Image 1 (cartoon, rainbow, N blue to C red):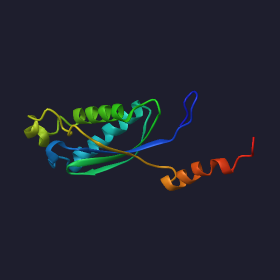
Image 2: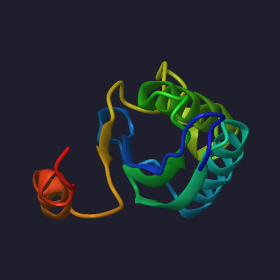
Image 3: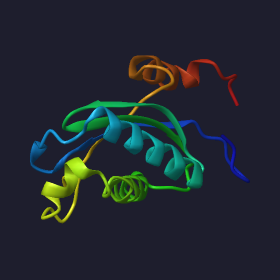
Image 4: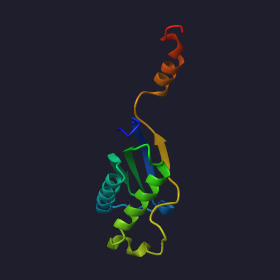
Length: 132
């Protein structure tokens, strides 16, 4: 991706967990969540590269612009996705919950070369330049 004065390739693996680890994500809810994640990602100029999950959590792999923080991406994705599934009859019994997702999240950077390759590249920088 390119900005006006930068080039970046940022990817993050996110995991969102249902509040209290309740097993509320049915196949139809998962489909709705994924659709919401796709819409929200596009609106933020992110690309949802992969998305799937189980009954109590969802995994997302996103490519995102340098202008966004991971926490702002997470807040938008979690908020929009929770709103998108409020009408599901299977969730009506859990309306007492203030939120669908737990407060926290898991995030890890990923993609590109391995840390060992990057460390070796940086370590050898002075060996590839000519003396001044």
